[in-house]
Image (tube, helix red, strand yellow):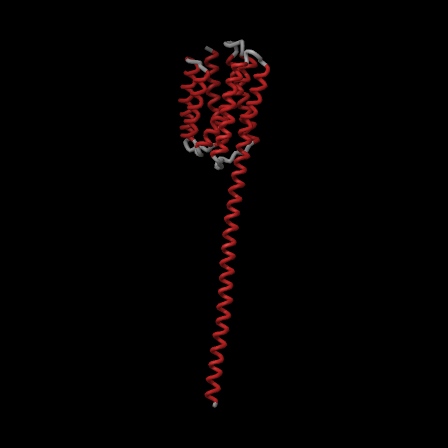
Length: 258
């Protein structure tokens, strides 16, 4: 009973951590009440599935679907950006949990699971704080779909590979931990790669704007040159016209004098 209560409390805290991770990538388009209400529904479905079914792949599928629904309906931004946010934060959570499972739970299932889950959430919370302090993700920025899909592939691939590694953990307890740590590093690197892609996108936008401005300045300069040439031509014609008029006047005066 105590383990169940502890699990539910820690699972609710994990929902809160996912929302914090979303805040690194996305800006809310719904109220906080709507976000936390959706998380409450997601928490109930996730907890019921874990307590009564306890099938890892089903739990993972529920997590993916629930987080995608919350991200798509509750936050602004492109679909690619929302999917990146979901799989980046979920990948980090899954990999940290798998590392803890290999180190502390494997072979001792049923004992001290709640305490291990506590440390998993604590490490995930520290990771979120570190990323929040070291990465500045502009929420209004965006990346191309091609590059976004590459980032999603890194996170999804790390989750799939972690499943394969867990299957092999019973044969060799050391190598799976090393491999899972490397996968976790890859998943965390997504946040930094994403920041770099945003910077590149911003530079590209600025360069395009500068090129547009330069093109406009060239057109304006060309118009000014044409106007100046027209003015010079008009002034030359006016001088000739005035000289001709002056000549006519002088000729008329001479004829009158005679």
